[in-house]
Amino acid sequence: MSARRGFIRLLVAAGWLTVAAVSSAAAAPKVHTIVVADMAYGPAPADVHVGDTVRWVNNDMFRHTATARDGSFDLDMKPKASAETVVKKAGTINVYCRFHPGMKQTLTVK
Amino acid sequence: MFKHLGLVAALAIAVPAVVSAQAQKPTDPQIAHIAYTAGAIDVAAGEQALAKSQNADVRAFAEEMVRDHKAVNDQALALVKKLGVTPQDNPTSQALTKQAEAKRAELAKLSGPAFDKAYVANEVAYHKTVNGALSGTLIPDASNAELKSLLQTGLKLFQEHEMHAEHLMGGLK
Image 1 (cartoon, rainbow over the protein chains, first blue to last red):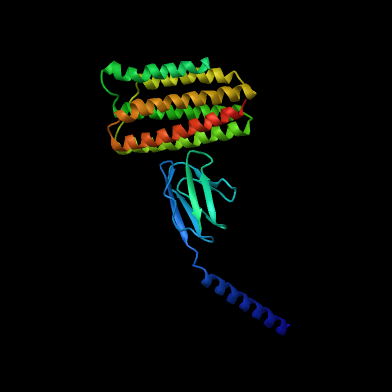
Image 2: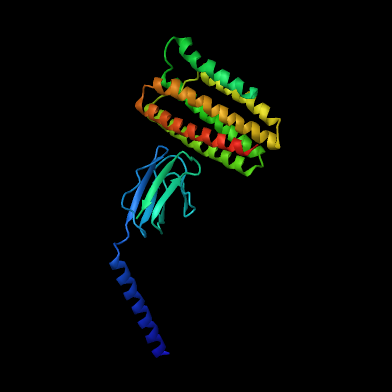
């Protein structure tokens, strides 16, 4: 029992070491904030990398969404609420509001 | 198509009527009243659609109309309170209300897809007309910067709704 527990501890410790090694190799993930106001998305952040978090803060009086055309996320935000997603792959993501489709934004993920 | 002409004509006549009747621009209290009335009419139309329509897309659209126009009207009420302005009734607001009542009665007689089409078609026409009034008269004539800014947000909202209604209309054929 105790030998087995020791083995598990070793595995857990090894796991942590691996995670630490991987995350120190890449840049630490960042959080990018986009403010939504007056029926428009604020400027798209530059320098978004895979693994970063993109957060929309809805400062508008209206409910909006930040919806990816490729279906990778669909964030629904009531007025004064925020929502976020972790971007998982590099490329261009076209984002729009399902309620107000004229609201559009292009995110570039490196 | 003829069904919408009444409201379009009323607005086309009524908006300039405020100007010509008084030989001057509409005042901010009148503009606030017109904008609020235009929003309240669309909230009522959305509520009528929610009570009558079984179409999921039409219902989602109607929910959006109710939600967005209530939000902008709440903001308008907060603004007039802050500015110490009392919205003032006027011929444009009265014409809008009268036409909306007629349209409401007309739509009340319809049901199913016929209602859906008539409601959405009217939403297209109504938003188009209000957009014209906002950009042509109400925004340029508003004196207070905060009122002007709220009307500009209202215009963006109405334009989005018009696009959404047109898109929805295309899917209802």
